[in-house]
Every structure is written in C-alpha cells, then in structure tokens.
Image (cartoon, rainbow, N blue to C red):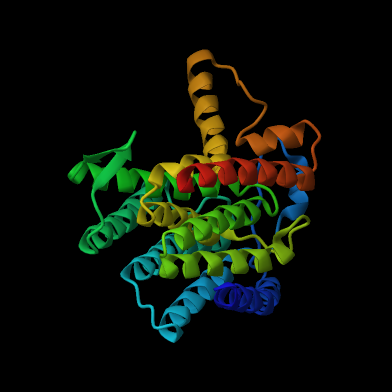
Length: 320
C-alpha cells in the first residue's frame, strides 16, 4: 500500500517540478505578472510582476495523476471523478479571474457577484453528482443521523463556496496556502485510507505531491504565485473531499487556518461598520503578524504547525 501511495505522490511532484519552471519562463517572456496593490504593506511592492497562475500546473498534475491512477489500478470510482470535476470547475473560475487581472493589469478580476455566481453553480454540480452517486443527504450530530434533504444541498453550496473563498483569502503570503493545503489533504488521505476509500486517497495523495513540488517555487521569496486558479480549486476540492468522506464538519478543524483567516476578515468588517474603528491592524490575520514584524517564513511555520496539530487531533478523534 505504501508503494501504491508513493507512485501518485512522486508522479505529481515530478510533473509540477518539471512544468513550473516552464510556466515561470513563459510568464516572464510575456510579462504576465501579478499586480500587487495592498494598502499598508509597502514591502509587498517588490512582488509586483511575479509570475502567477501556478495553479495551472498543479491542477493539471493532480487531474492527470488521479485519472491515470484510477485507470492503471482499475479503481474507477465516481467519487474521485466528482473530485476531479470539482477541482477543474473551480480552477476554471480562478483561471478566468486571474486572466482578467493580468490583461487589465489590476488586482481585481471578476466582479464579486460574477465569481460568487460561478462558484454556486460549480457547487450545485458537485451536489448533483454527490446525490446521483447515492451519498446520504444527512448530517450526524452526537451520534444521531439527521436527514436534511434539500437543506443539505444548500449546506453543500455554502461549504464549497465558503471554503473556496477561505483558501483564496489565506493566499496572501508566499507558501502559506500550499503548505497548509498539503497538510489538510494529507490528513484526509489518512482518513480515506481508514475508510478504505482508495480513489479519494489517491486524489489526496496526488494533491499533496503536487503542492510539495509547487512549494519549491512558491516559498518565500516566491518565484511564482498559485493565483485564484490554484486557491479556489484547492478550497473547492478540500470541501468536496470532506463531504465524500462523510465528515464535512471536520473541515472546521482540519482547515482551522482557513477558518481563522476568514473569521478575522468577517470580524474586522463587522466591527468597522458598527464602530468606525478597526479591531485588527489588517486582515486576513497573517497581515497583522506581518505588521507586527514577523517575516513570512515565521508566519508560515507557525500557521502550518497550528494547522497540523489541530488537524491531527481532529483525525484521531474521528478515527478513534
């Protein structure tokens, strides 16, 4: 089994390590860099023009490795196919958003309502596939299974849209999302193994391998950003994995960093509208630590450690 897991990990890792330098070269030749406009973070100006849309490479690697992994191991599983489609759909939304930013040379791509609408449609397509595959439309609370019916579909939409945006919000400093997402998918790979869901485990391992490879180029100082094509795809796929493993609420803890980052933005906006003052120096919260003098490596390391510890404890509670 260990050998079987090494194959998708190593394959996706090699694909990303080989293809990312080509994308960086292409972006530089075409001057397709990220526009940075973050008020209060003047030291981020040096990142202006950094190649972006790195998600194109690792999304491709994940999809290819997952598809060929299923074919070669003769484990065609509808749940894995749903994951591949979900990753591709959210990646396509991010691609559109990134492309507009690059062409218009600005930090805003799609209008908020456009992006949200497309995310909802992608979530509804996942919900349809989830229902069509026969997964239960219910949640388990204190050992009791509660049927929600159509309300569960709304829950799916809220979770996928919410976490795709949460991961996107977290992608504000070099390497943070790539590392944290790798940790989360690794934990879900273990849970999938415990449930004998090889197809989902294969997908998660492919994601981990791809993100480890991408970190070589995305760690501080980043040679390339993943862009919305990467962060939206990872967030949507992560939520989808949690549903397919029948533990959607586990994402609140396995994805604790994404939850905290988003919560600080919501708290900041709410507090400002009510008082006219800011509770934090800047949100998402990683920017607060930057303004307090932490370098990006320190923020990454501490956040990854917190995410890994909380996620591991959550996994132990679920399994045992």
